[in-house]
Image 1 (cartoon, rainbow over the protein chains, first blue to last red):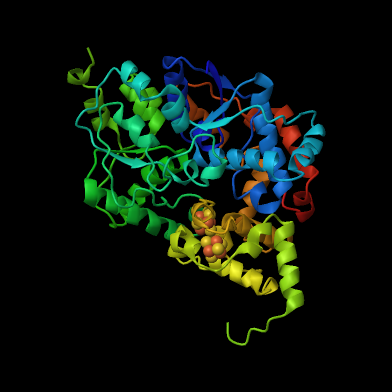
Image 2: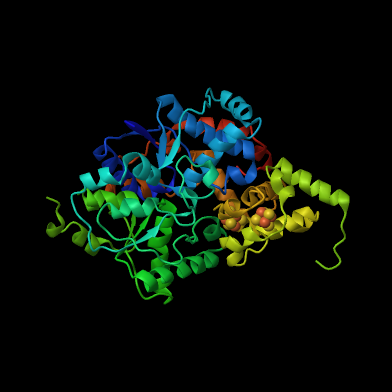
Length: 302
Length: 173
Ligand code: SF4
Ligand code: SF4
């Protein structure tokens, strides 16, 4: 793969563009040029068209995918919602009887066509299956030995496994993110609630308390069982929940700790030696101290 | 469920409605409960998801469940789809049910904002343009992202798709 279409979604370019910067920084290091998909819209998010009308969802997602097809590239994203929505739409357009034609009828209204030529990869899948841990090992500037990571892969990178391009061998015991993180030298031990939901998404927008309850259960398990230095997420929504809701729980006295959080692209960008101010500069829970440790002299490779 | 009368016509109507909205595998459910056991929504009290929602449908209680809020708490996580031994794809049943609810405008008003925003600027999740620009500057990126946000042509395309959709009849954008 020489080029890949960068599907940004909403949260990454608006609220966490340091993640976008991390994408743009690390991909060329691995020999892949990120290509913009100009005019790409919301995936559309689960609470929008998918909740109202199936064909409208498929045509909006179909339009987004067609932007990549036009450029002859596959798609990658770091948002699990975008990944799930686009992957499921692609699967339905291509496998649910009649949908391919319905979508193309709709897209004709705007002079576009869905062909089905672009694949959709989560950035974790790209890093795991196409770039691979060996290449990551080759490229890191700082070795993260001794740094303990809590993994948060997120729901929409594993289920439903039948619609995804790259699959976990056991979706209830995911190893993609673990393999990527361990390629930096860091350790990523198992904990009992590793595949639990973080509570972001519809649960959060429809009942914030239920969402916080779900998150607290998970973050407490992480703290008690493995007491990590950082949390690394595969998903930008999980990232926002881990970064933002620890603050909320701490202010309410529900927890008495804070663990710095990175999106996997940011974690790798730090390992590759990029400027933390640019690739990991926007957060609620401070990352200053751990970043200093991660990029300390003694960790320099060679 | 005491006093529930099995009414064949209502069952038929419920199954047809949910199938029409994309949940046609609902009839394959054997009520084993595997989906509910793993559902993060059920765990925190959104009880009418997965097996329970399907039971309501298969017993014909469509209108009786119209105002149910559990469906809007579904994380769309698809754990249920993964574990269902019958290939029901419960999440798709939940979303079919949401579409039925939306067609009757049985949804909270807070659901309207994102639709409006998707229609206007092509993004459901937005913050102020100033905040976007400021965040992007911090990351050393151009203030405007290459998405639909500041792209009139793209916004027109999205509006055309939405205008030609059943969503347009709901008066939500
Ligand atoms: S997709 Fe919805 S119904 Fe299925 S397990 Fe997840 S939250 Fe529950
Ligand atoms: S797992 Fe499948 S068969 Fe079992 S209750 Fe859920 S939907 Fe029905």
